[in-house]
Amino acid sequence: MRGPEDQFAAGHIPADVMRRLPPGTDPRRVVIVQTAPRSYTGPILLAITISGGVALVVLMIAVTLHVASVAAVAVLSASGGVGLTLARTKNRKS
Image 1 (tube, rainbow, N blue to C red):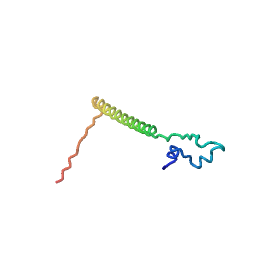
Image 2 (tube, one colour; image 1 turned 120 degrees about the vertical axis):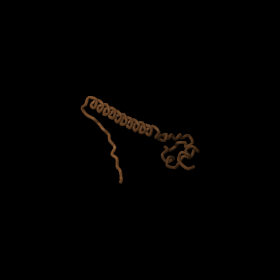
Image 3 (cartoon, one colour; image 1 turned 45 degrees about the vertical axis):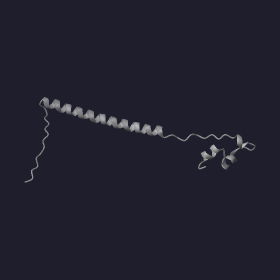
Image 4 (tube, helix red, strand yellow; image 1 turned 180 degrees about the vertical axis):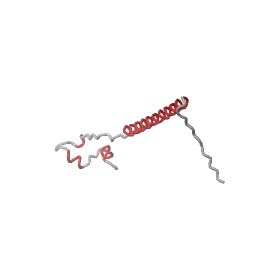
């Protein structure tokens, strides 16, 4: 028997519990009720869901800003107001 749960399952009542019983109580008729151990599945899944949702919102904001900036540059360059040129410099080592 490794832990208190094993003792309770085998019908053994630990001495500290036995001392708390009222006088005249038959220990064979005592039922010990324990709370179930806490499950961490719910909080972990909630944290993962919130993190995924935040990441998705940030990604959608980035995509929206990218599309809006490309559309703005396209409209301004088509109207003749602004031009955007991307040029690669050639580095020649002689």
